[in-house]
Length: 305
Ligand code: SF4
Ligand code: SF4
Image: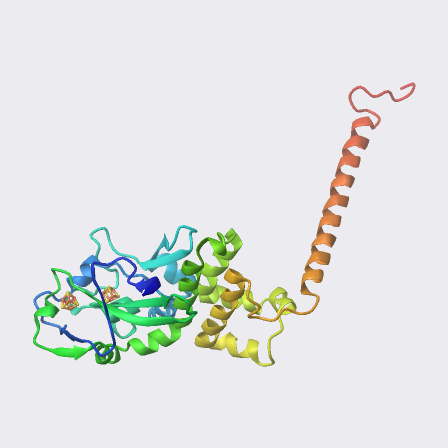
Protein backbone atom coordinates (compact mmCIF):
# COMPACT_ATOMS: atom_id res chain seq x y z
CA UNK A 1 0.00 0.00 0.00
CA UNK A 2 1.55 3.30 -0.98
CA UNK A 3 2.14 5.83 1.71
CA UNK A 4 3.09 8.98 -0.18
CA UNK A 5 2.69 9.93 -3.81
CA UNK A 6 4.42 12.47 -6.01
CA UNK A 7 3.42 12.65 -9.62
CA UNK A 8 4.27 14.45 -12.82
CA UNK A 9 2.04 16.09 -13.91
CA UNK A 10 0.94 17.09 -10.42
CA UNK A 11 -2.73 17.60 -11.16
CA UNK A 12 -4.28 15.55 -13.89
CA UNK A 13 -7.42 13.61 -14.70
CA UNK A 14 -5.64 10.30 -14.35
CA UNK A 15 -7.41 7.01 -14.12
CA UNK A 16 -6.19 6.23 -10.61
CA UNK A 17 -5.02 2.76 -11.57
CA UNK A 18 -1.30 2.28 -10.96
CA UNK A 19 0.42 0.63 -13.92
CA UNK A 20 3.70 -1.28 -14.15
CA UNK A 21 6.37 -0.82 -16.87
CA UNK A 22 5.22 -3.94 -18.70
CA UNK A 23 1.57 -2.84 -18.83
CA UNK A 24 0.44 -2.43 -22.45
CA UNK A 25 -1.38 0.75 -23.54
CA UNK A 26 -3.14 1.55 -26.79
CA UNK A 27 -1.78 4.82 -28.07
CA UNK A 28 -0.17 6.57 -30.99
CA UNK A 29 0.46 10.26 -31.63
CA UNK A 30 1.64 11.61 -34.99
CA UNK A 31 1.61 14.72 -37.12
CA UNK A 32 -1.63 14.62 -39.05
CA UNK A 33 -3.79 13.01 -36.36
CA UNK A 34 -7.09 14.92 -36.10
CA UNK A 35 -6.26 16.30 -32.65
CA UNK A 36 -2.70 17.34 -33.53
CA UNK A 37 -1.53 20.04 -31.05
CA UNK A 38 -4.80 19.95 -29.05
CA UNK A 39 -2.84 18.97 -25.92
CA UNK A 40 -0.40 21.91 -26.37
CA UNK A 41 -3.38 24.29 -26.50
CA UNK A 42 -4.36 23.27 -22.96
CA UNK A 43 -0.86 23.00 -21.59
CA UNK A 44 -0.34 22.43 -17.87
CA UNK A 45 3.32 21.48 -17.82
CA UNK A 46 5.19 21.33 -14.52
CA UNK A 47 8.92 21.72 -15.05
CA UNK A 48 11.61 19.60 -13.41
CA UNK A 49 15.23 20.84 -13.15
CA UNK A 50 16.60 18.94 -16.18
CA UNK A 51 13.67 20.20 -18.30
CA UNK A 52 14.80 23.77 -17.65
CA UNK A 53 18.40 22.93 -18.39
CA UNK A 54 17.48 21.48 -21.80
CA UNK A 55 15.06 24.28 -22.68
CA UNK A 56 17.37 27.15 -21.74
CA UNK A 57 20.16 25.59 -23.80
CA UNK A 58 17.81 25.04 -26.71
CA UNK A 59 16.61 28.63 -26.62
CA UNK A 60 20.09 30.08 -26.01
CA UNK A 61 19.03 31.76 -22.78
CA UNK A 62 20.42 31.94 -19.28
CA UNK A 63 18.34 30.10 -16.69
CA UNK A 64 17.14 33.42 -15.24
CA UNK A 65 16.10 34.68 -18.68
CA UNK A 66 14.29 31.44 -19.44
CA UNK A 67 12.38 31.60 -16.15
CA UNK A 68 11.45 35.24 -16.73
CA UNK A 69 10.21 34.68 -20.27
CA UNK A 70 8.79 31.18 -20.29
CA UNK A 71 7.87 30.03 -16.78
CA UNK A 72 5.27 30.83 -14.14
CA UNK A 73 5.70 30.09 -10.43
CA UNK A 74 3.36 28.07 -8.24
CA UNK A 75 3.56 26.50 -4.79
CA UNK A 76 4.09 22.75 -4.72
CA UNK A 77 2.92 22.32 -1.14
CA UNK A 78 1.46 24.10 1.86
CA UNK A 79 4.96 25.19 2.94
CA UNK A 80 5.39 27.23 -0.21
CA UNK A 81 7.95 24.91 -1.86
CA UNK A 82 8.40 26.72 -5.18
CA UNK A 83 7.50 25.07 -8.47
CA UNK A 84 7.52 26.28 -12.07
CA UNK A 85 5.20 25.62 -14.98
CA UNK A 86 5.61 26.41 -18.65
CA UNK A 87 4.02 29.73 -19.50
CA UNK A 88 1.01 29.76 -21.82
CA UNK A 89 -0.87 32.55 -23.56
CA UNK A 90 -4.25 33.68 -22.23
CA UNK A 91 -6.03 30.88 -24.07
CA UNK A 92 -3.82 28.21 -22.44
CA UNK A 93 -1.62 27.55 -25.49
CA UNK A 94 2.00 26.76 -24.71
CA UNK A 95 4.36 29.52 -25.88
CA UNK A 96 6.61 26.85 -27.44
CA UNK A 97 3.92 25.75 -29.89
CA UNK A 98 4.99 26.72 -33.38
CA UNK A 99 1.64 26.86 -35.14
CA UNK A 100 0.77 23.92 -37.37
CA UNK A 101 4.41 22.78 -37.29
CA UNK A 102 3.87 21.55 -33.74
CA UNK A 103 6.21 21.82 -30.79
CA UNK A 104 9.02 24.29 -31.46
CA UNK A 105 11.34 22.59 -28.97
CA UNK A 106 10.35 18.99 -29.69
CA UNK A 107 13.81 17.39 -29.22
CA UNK A 108 14.11 19.19 -25.87
CA UNK A 109 10.47 19.03 -24.75
CA UNK A 110 9.89 18.64 -21.00
CA UNK A 111 9.31 15.37 -19.16
CA UNK A 112 5.54 15.85 -18.85
CA UNK A 113 5.22 16.31 -22.63
CA UNK A 114 7.37 13.22 -23.29
CA UNK A 115 5.36 11.00 -20.97
CA UNK A 116 1.91 12.18 -22.03
CA UNK A 117 -0.59 10.42 -21.90
CA UNK A 118 1.30 8.45 -19.27
CA UNK A 119 1.86 10.08 -15.87
CA UNK A 120 4.95 9.26 -13.86
CA UNK A 121 4.22 8.45 -10.22
CA UNK A 122 6.89 8.28 -7.58
CA UNK A 123 5.46 6.20 -4.76
CA UNK A 124 6.99 5.61 -1.39
CA UNK A 125 5.84 2.53 0.43
CA UNK A 126 5.36 2.47 4.20
CA UNK A 127 8.63 1.62 5.92
CA UNK A 128 10.71 2.20 2.78
CA UNK A 129 13.05 5.11 2.21
CA UNK A 130 13.15 4.52 -1.55
CA UNK A 131 10.67 5.89 -4.05
CA UNK A 132 9.33 3.41 -6.56
CA UNK A 133 8.48 4.65 -10.04
CA UNK A 134 5.12 3.58 -11.38
CA UNK A 135 2.73 5.00 -13.89
CA UNK A 136 -0.86 5.85 -14.60
CA UNK A 137 -2.74 6.70 -17.77
CA UNK A 138 -4.20 10.12 -18.53
CA UNK A 139 -7.34 10.01 -20.67
CA UNK A 140 -8.65 13.34 -21.89
CA UNK A 141 -11.51 13.76 -24.34
CA UNK A 142 -9.55 15.83 -26.83
CA UNK A 143 -6.78 13.24 -27.23
CA UNK A 144 -7.59 10.82 -30.05
CA UNK A 145 -4.32 8.91 -29.72
CA UNK A 146 -6.07 6.39 -27.47
CA UNK A 147 -8.26 5.33 -30.40
CA UNK A 148 -5.26 4.36 -32.54
CA UNK A 149 -4.61 0.73 -33.20
CA UNK A 150 -1.19 0.34 -31.60
CA UNK A 151 -0.30 -1.56 -28.48
CA UNK A 152 2.91 -0.66 -26.71
CA UNK A 153 4.20 -1.35 -23.21
CA UNK A 154 4.85 1.63 -20.96
CA UNK A 155 8.55 0.64 -20.83
CA UNK A 156 8.79 0.74 -24.63
CA UNK A 157 6.82 3.99 -24.76
CA UNK A 158 9.25 5.59 -22.27
CA UNK A 159 12.20 4.47 -24.41
CA UNK A 160 10.54 5.72 -27.59
CA UNK A 161 9.90 9.15 -26.06
CA UNK A 162 13.38 9.54 -24.53
CA UNK A 163 12.08 9.63 -20.96
CA UNK A 164 14.93 7.62 -19.45
CA UNK A 165 17.60 10.32 -19.78
CA UNK A 166 15.23 12.86 -18.25
CA UNK A 167 14.29 10.56 -15.38
CA UNK A 168 17.95 9.79 -14.69
CA UNK A 169 18.71 13.48 -14.31
CA UNK A 170 15.56 14.40 -12.38
CA UNK A 171 15.22 11.31 -10.17
CA UNK A 172 17.07 12.63 -7.13
CA UNK A 173 14.97 15.78 -7.23
CA UNK A 174 11.74 13.74 -7.24
CA UNK A 175 13.11 11.85 -4.24
CA UNK A 176 13.76 15.13 -2.42
CA UNK A 177 10.22 16.34 -2.95
CA UNK A 178 8.77 13.00 -1.98
CA UNK A 179 10.86 12.97 1.19
CA UNK A 180 9.75 16.50 2.01
CA UNK A 181 6.09 15.47 1.47
CA UNK A 182 6.31 12.28 3.46
CA UNK A 183 8.21 13.96 6.33
CA UNK A 184 5.30 16.41 6.66
CA UNK A 185 5.36 18.52 9.80
CA UNK A 186 8.32 16.60 11.29
CA UNK A 187 10.80 18.68 9.25
CA UNK A 188 8.67 21.81 9.72
CA UNK A 189 8.23 24.68 7.29
CA UNK A 190 11.57 25.52 5.71
CA UNK A 191 12.76 29.08 6.41
CA UNK A 192 12.56 31.58 3.54
CA UNK A 193 16.33 31.27 2.87
CA UNK A 194 15.94 27.51 2.35
CA UNK A 195 13.03 28.04 -0.06
CA UNK A 196 15.11 30.58 -1.99
CA UNK A 197 18.04 28.16 -2.13
CA UNK A 198 15.67 25.41 -3.29
CA UNK A 199 14.47 27.64 -6.13
CA UNK A 200 17.98 28.62 -7.20
CA UNK A 201 19.47 25.12 -7.01
CA UNK A 202 16.47 23.48 -8.72
CA UNK A 203 15.72 25.95 -11.49
CA UNK A 204 18.15 28.85 -11.77
CA UNK A 205 21.28 26.85 -12.42
CA UNK A 206 23.40 29.70 -13.79
CA UNK A 207 22.86 31.67 -10.60
CA UNK A 208 23.50 28.55 -8.52
CA UNK A 209 26.84 28.17 -10.35
CA UNK A 210 27.83 31.72 -9.39
CA UNK A 211 26.82 30.98 -5.80
CA UNK A 212 28.92 27.79 -5.67
CA UNK A 213 31.92 29.48 -7.28
CA UNK A 214 31.85 32.39 -4.83
CA UNK A 215 34.67 32.88 -2.32
CA UNK A 216 32.20 32.57 0.55
CA UNK A 217 31.00 29.14 -0.60
CA UNK A 218 34.56 27.90 -1.17
CA UNK A 219 35.51 29.05 2.32
CA UNK A 220 32.59 27.15 3.83
CA UNK A 221 32.64 23.71 2.17
CA UNK A 222 35.26 21.03 1.60
CA UNK A 223 35.11 19.80 -1.99
CA UNK A 224 37.66 17.74 -3.93
CA UNK A 225 40.31 19.16 -6.25
CA UNK A 226 38.90 19.74 -9.69
CA UNK A 227 35.31 20.11 -8.47
CA UNK A 228 35.07 23.82 -9.20
CA UNK A 229 36.73 23.53 -12.63
CA UNK A 230 34.29 20.72 -13.52
CA UNK A 231 31.08 22.46 -12.50
CA UNK A 232 32.15 25.69 -14.17
CA UNK A 233 31.37 24.10 -17.56
CA UNK A 234 29.39 20.96 -16.84
CA UNK A 235 25.68 21.64 -16.22
CA UNK A 236 24.79 18.02 -15.51
CA UNK A 237 27.52 17.73 -12.85
CA UNK A 238 26.34 20.97 -11.29
CA UNK A 239 22.76 19.68 -11.23
CA UNK A 240 23.89 16.52 -9.43
CA UNK A 241 25.67 18.67 -6.87
CA UNK A 242 22.55 20.88 -6.52
CA UNK A 243 20.51 17.84 -5.41
CA UNK A 244 23.21 16.87 -2.92
CA UNK A 245 23.33 20.40 -1.54
CA UNK A 246 19.53 20.51 -1.23
CA UNK A 247 19.55 17.48 1.07
CA UNK A 248 21.55 19.65 3.45
CA UNK A 249 19.33 22.69 2.93
CA UNK A 250 16.00 20.88 3.38
CA UNK A 251 16.81 18.08 5.80
CA UNK A 252 20.02 19.16 7.54
CA UNK A 253 21.87 16.08 6.20
CA UNK A 254 25.65 16.44 6.20
CA UNK A 255 25.69 15.83 2.45
CA UNK A 256 28.40 18.42 1.77
CA UNK A 257 31.23 18.57 4.26
CA UNK A 258 31.84 21.95 5.87
CA UNK A 259 35.33 23.20 6.73
CA UNK A 260 36.04 22.53 10.40
CA UNK A 261 35.65 26.05 11.73
CA UNK A 262 33.28 27.41 9.07
CA UNK A 263 30.61 28.21 11.62
CA UNK A 264 33.07 29.96 13.95
CA UNK A 265 34.50 31.89 10.98
CA UNK A 266 31.04 33.06 9.99
CA UNK A 267 30.30 34.12 13.58
CA UNK A 268 33.64 35.99 13.76
CA UNK A 269 33.00 37.70 10.41
CA UNK A 270 29.52 38.72 11.51
CA UNK A 271 30.84 39.92 14.86
CA UNK A 272 33.40 42.08 13.06
CA UNK A 273 30.63 43.58 10.93
CA UNK A 274 28.37 44.10 13.96
CA UNK A 275 31.24 45.70 15.94
CA UNK A 276 32.03 48.03 13.03
CA UNK A 277 28.36 48.99 12.71
CA UNK A 278 28.06 49.61 16.45
CA UNK A 279 31.16 51.83 16.45
CA UNK A 280 29.82 53.70 13.44
CA UNK A 281 26.55 54.28 15.27
CA UNK A 282 28.29 55.45 18.46
CA UNK A 283 30.43 57.88 16.41
CA UNK A 284 27.32 59.14 14.61
CA UNK A 285 25.47 59.80 17.88
CA UNK A 286 28.54 61.41 19.41
CA UNK A 287 28.86 63.74 16.44
CA UNK A 288 25.16 64.62 16.65
CA UNK A 289 25.61 65.49 20.35
CA UNK A 290 28.77 67.55 19.60
CA UNK A 291 26.99 69.42 16.82
CA UNK A 292 24.08 70.15 19.12
CA UNK A 293 26.27 71.89 21.69
CA UNK A 294 28.77 73.42 19.27
CA UNK A 295 29.31 77.16 19.57
CA UNK A 296 26.79 78.99 17.39
CA UNK A 297 24.13 76.35 17.50
CA UNK A 298 20.70 77.47 18.48
CA UNK A 299 20.46 77.92 22.28
CA UNK A 300 24.22 77.74 22.92
CA UNK A 301 26.27 80.40 24.69
CA UNK A 302 29.60 81.36 23.13
CA UNK A 303 31.20 83.70 25.64
CA UNK A 304 31.28 87.54 25.14
CA UNK A 305 30.63 87.68 21.41
S1 SF4 B 1 6.70 22.15 -24.82
FE1 SF4 B 1 6.07 21.46 -26.83
S2 SF4 B 1 5.05 19.51 -26.46
FE2 SF4 B 1 5.14 20.56 -24.50
S3 SF4 B 1 3.21 21.67 -24.32
FE3 SF4 B 1 4.70 23.06 -25.22
S4 SF4 B 1 4.46 22.88 -27.42
FE4 SF4 B 1 3.46 21.10 -26.47
S1 SF4 C 1 -2.89 12.41 -29.92
FE1 SF4 C 1 -3.02 13.31 -27.89
S2 SF4 C 1 -0.89 13.78 -27.47
FE2 SF4 C 1 -1.03 13.52 -29.68
S3 SF4 C 1 -1.44 15.57 -30.50
FE3 SF4 C 1 -3.44 14.57 -30.15
S4 SF4 C 1 -3.99 15.34 -28.13
FE4 SF4 C 1 -1.81 15.64 -28.31
